[in-house]
Amino acid sequence: MKVRDLDLDKLLAVEPDTTLSEIARRMRRDDADSVAVMHRGRLVGIVTERDMVRAMADGLDPQEARAAVVMAKDPATVDAGEDVSVVAMKMIRLGVRHFPVIDGGKPIGLVSARNLVRGLDRES
Image (cartoon, rainbow, N blue to C red; front, side):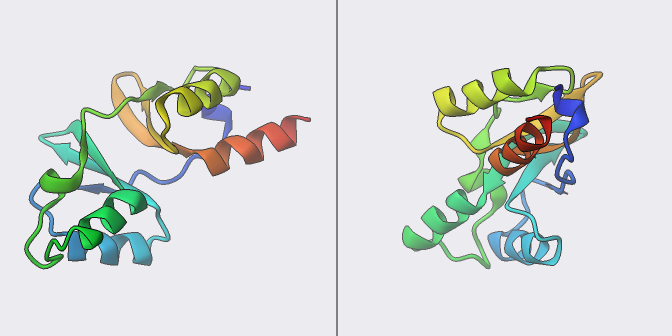
């Protein structure tokens, strides 16, 4: 099974200057656990729930702090044509739970550990 065969999460995108409070509102509204940070059409980072929790624990003001401050810069990505078992191993090796999915050089969605488990469960 390939990544493109999974039910990918919608690519929720924000700009680097988006406040954490706005990111939290959008994540809640869209029931998302991460957002891609895009600048001029290019993926520059990712903000996850884990990043948001760390920011709050570190005392950052969500009304003032911006995505650029908390995002993981230049996040690892996966290609839509990659095998899901390879992606699962990549998640384990890198210690992450989300990857932006790239197809033809453009981000098309997000794959999470949850997507992988569902897809692998369907396959068995």
